[in-house]
Every structure is written in structure tokens, then in C-alpha cells.
Length: 172
Image (cartoon, rainbow, N blue to C red; front, side, top):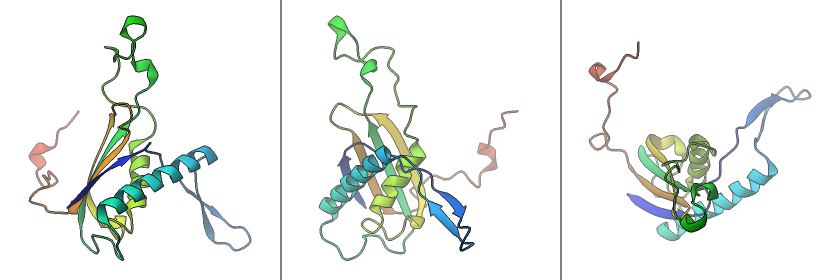
């Protein structure tokens, strides 16, 4: 098992799209996202790779190769200034402030960016991930980033409900 902390601002990986090249007849992948987000994504990539490299040390190969994996990503997002009180309550969290971030960036897009950054360091390919736990929470000021855990998948540790029909609830 490896675990490490990343400081920085989690950035989403934009959605790519496929288009047909009219001259070659082949599909081309066009990366999505703005130039501003591209810079943020590059910065986040550097933060993740640096934190992983510090934890893992110099390596010729990834830690986990050809193994099924369980990964946990606990993202810590910056809380907006509007969540804090004004006047005599300045600096204190407002009682009406939400408990967790429900706004952008999308959890799946910051997950994809982070997993791509870890490929080649923590694991040889993110297709090896068979179990994934992801959370998005607010950070204490200056603690934005992520806490990451990667370990070999062990079905005895991971609780599964896929074969227990009694746990399926019908909303109808």
C-alpha cells in the first residue's frame, strides 16, 4: 500500500471529442477544455507527480504492475470567501455555509486528471483500477489538494453488494 498527500488545487481534465479528418478518413481526438484550465491542469499534474515521486523515490517502473488495484482519492477543495461571516464574524465559517462542495469541478473530471498523473509512477495503467473511492470536501485554508491511497485490490477488504439482490431498493 502507498499513500501520500498532495498540496495544490485539483484541476479537471476536460472532455475530449473525436472528429473525422476529412482528408485521411481517420478519427482524431481533440482535447477539451480552455487554455486557462490547461494551465491549471498542468500545474495539478506537476503537484501530483512531485508528491508521488517524493513518496516513492527514484523508480524505473511503477509500484504496481499488472495487478488489480483499489484507489482512494480524497480531494480537498478551496472554500469560497462567501462562506465566511462578515463584520464581527469575519474569518468564521457562516452557519449557512454548505458542508461539502457541490459545484465545479466535477468529481469525475478531477479523478481522471489525478489518475492520469499517477500513471507510470504508482501503477502501470489506470485500467488496473477495479475499485475506486472518491470524495470531495472543503479544505482548511492552505490545505487544498488530495490525500491518495493505492493498494492491491483485496475482495475481503472491499464490501460488495453486487450479488445480494436483497440490498437493491426499488424507488417505485
